[in-house]
Length: 117
Image 1: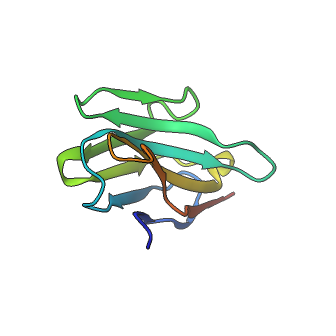
Image 2 (image 1 turned 90 degrees about the vertical axis):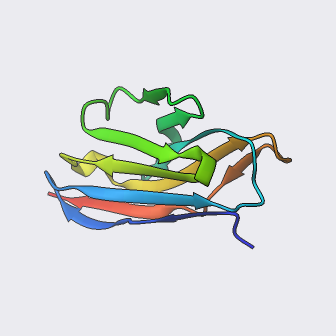
Image 3 (image 1 turned 120 degrees about the horizontal axis):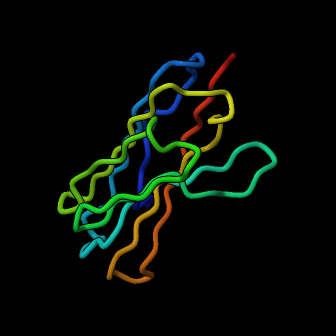
C-alpha cells in the first residue's frame, strides 16, 4: 500500500511549466510538514521546497523565484508549481511527509520530470 503518491511529472521544454501534486494517506495524521525533494542523474537527493502546517515555506536557492510550494496539510495535500524550468531541473521528484504518525517520515515513489533543451 502506497501511503504517499505523487503525480504530474512528465517531459517539458526548457522555459515551460509543470505542476506536481502529492496526496498522503488519511492514515497519516497530525502532519507537521510536507515537501519535495529531487534526485538528478548521478546526484544525491536534495531538498527542493517544503511547507509547514503553519504555512511557512523554504526553498532551495536553485529554485527560489521559479517554484512555488503550496498545500492543505489538513487534507494531506501538497503541490509544487514549477515555472521557467531548466534542463538542470531534470530529476525524480519525491514527496516527503513528516508527521506525528509512526514511523514519522514518509516518502512517495517519485515522479520523473524531464526538461529538454
